[in-house]
Image (cartoon, rainbow, N blue to C red; front, side, top):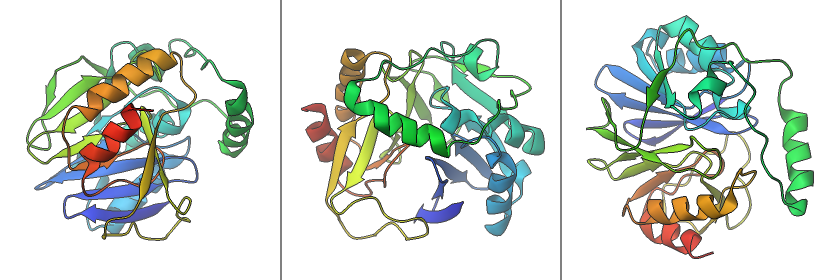
Length: 248
């Protein structure tokens, strides 16, 4: 895993498949998504490398139930004691009470999905000890009041997290980013200067029309910084980039 500082209070945790984010409020940390199976101990090591303790993470907010986002949640919650939060529609799948519904794949998505599946670790994730259910419009205790934004389409219970006081948005897989010159290799820092991004609506969805409605909702938030489940964050002028993605 690579740990990359994006802003003084925000780090990107980059895994072989997907990524998570670590937000800091003073001595308190919040983890947004938790990587694949086996990521829990790796996240703990990354946090220690930053001079902090896993126990400083008070909450793990999951944007949806897919395995590349929740696989390490139970592991890390057991290590840290952090509270795990997910939307009420995805929470049963996070708790391991039932398998989540499979995405409805377009033909062009099939080889991409097969390649991603090949890279995912095998096995079932360790369910968290408990899951706190959240709903649209709820305000969470980090980032100056992080607002839960329900963005169905990728999954029924997908959420984004909007930090109005910071101008920051975590989209989960509702939006993905493709840098103009391809995906940066692991370990390469995210550029601080403006770069061309191509933002696209997320793939591997349950309901693409609903997803597109959700992308339009996010585009209306007017954020400066946008962080995605896949692809490099946009650190400047994200609102305009999101509006272009919403028009696709």
